[in-house]
Image (cartoon, rainbow, N blue to C red):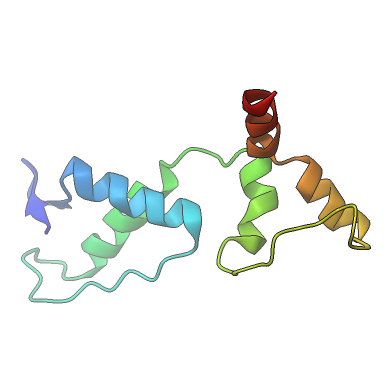
Length: 107
């Protein structure tokens, strides 16, 4: 829900901004702006504002960049000792910090 700032331009509440940025960190969301624009320049200023919000997001870490292609796919658990894994798959498996944290907790 857009509201107008002191200058009359559309803005989103902080919670909506955070939600939009979190979606963008997971994937490339398609933002659809509907309704009657309340600004004289029309929907253009709304689109510019959304682009501005998305540019302010933090840079993804190396692990997040490595995980991104696999985020939206349901996969069978890796069995590195039983399966013949490609080098890139094994490298991804080795970078998994959760695996090592759980191993330490169990030990």
